Image 1 (tube, rainbow, N blue to C red):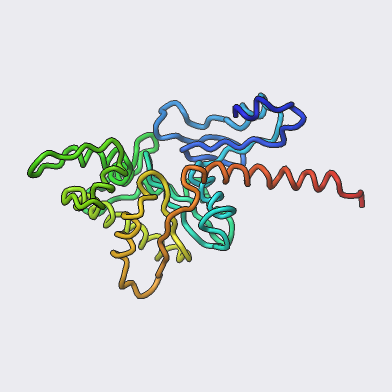
Image 2 (tube, rainbow, N blue to C red; image 1 turned 45 degrees about the vertical axis):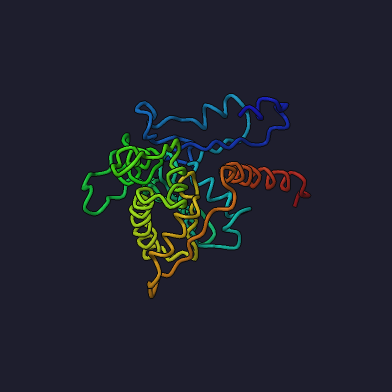
Length: 265
């Protein structure tokens, strides 16, 4: 948005905003945002359109990240894939037949609300984080790490990725925590593979983009005889959402310019 403010009004062709929320993309409405109680049915697209006088797209940030990986990253050439991001939260961007699948109520890919066997039977609650999100997300990993008990002094970890780095370095407690989370993630990957049969599932985010987690998940999935899926790391890192936004903005802008320049029939 800061970039948009620096542009002359006539040069601004489009604005794309990514939010960690369920979004009605057609109407530019933020349906619900887990972290903010008051963000329900917010007409963000109309609000920004009135300010910037251009075409505005409001989209779920994980969907934008999946778009970025599709156009410029590790999913180039893949028509059916899933991009799972694991950071502060957990979500998935789903591509079917070369297009984003958002679902009838715009909530396709909200896998953070999946029930976790033997741990939770909670019903999804729109303004609370899901149980899977609490376990796999960075805050949950750090919470588990700080609660671990064992011989000697527990090494300090400021970020969830630090715990996985400790596992890579041979720390037994960190290794056990990694295996626990990788087992949960492998179950999610297998379930998605059975339902959607994608060619590849990409992992991204602070937690998801750790190579050791990806290796552990692949190891746990070995032996599957069908619904076999490749598990790879996203290629764009923290730039995935940005590239997805750029591609989303350029499509209608370029189409509009082509139509404007085409001779009248």
